[in-house]
Image (tube, rainbow, N blue to C red; front, side, top):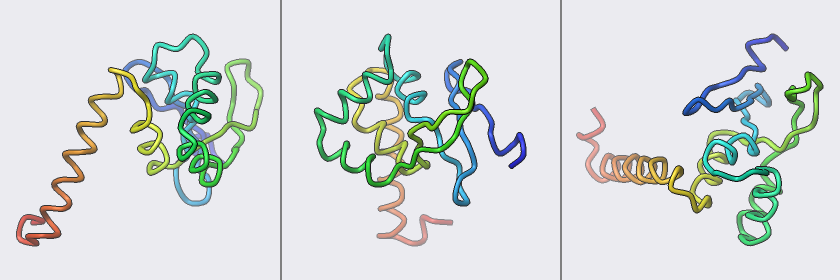
Amino acid sequence: MTDSDKALVVFQSKKIRRTWFKDEWHYSLVDIVQALTDSVNSTDYLKKLRKRDEELGSYLGTNCPHVEMLTETGKNRQVLAGNTKDVFRLIQSIPSKNAEPFKRWLAEVGKERIDEIENPELAQ
């Protein structure tokens, strides 16, 4: 695996770890939570979110693998990670004002896609 396969992406000046796994990018879910909330402990926030929303907890537990990622201390650790679809599912469940722009964008993209299905001429 090359260095480009394990890279950071920057979101609103927050670093999000990612790695190439099973032919697609997987992102650290804890890093996503950290970027979108004001939580002091993003790991604990994600645990509580999964407990409160059983459907989300089940979804993440079933669909999101633990993959090896580099920590701030320079060690490789197993981290709960999700692909783009999983990240979107997580974002929809975060009750934070920082997540609202993404929720609105997802709604707009979804609406555009439905419009294209209903009227294929719009897809051009």
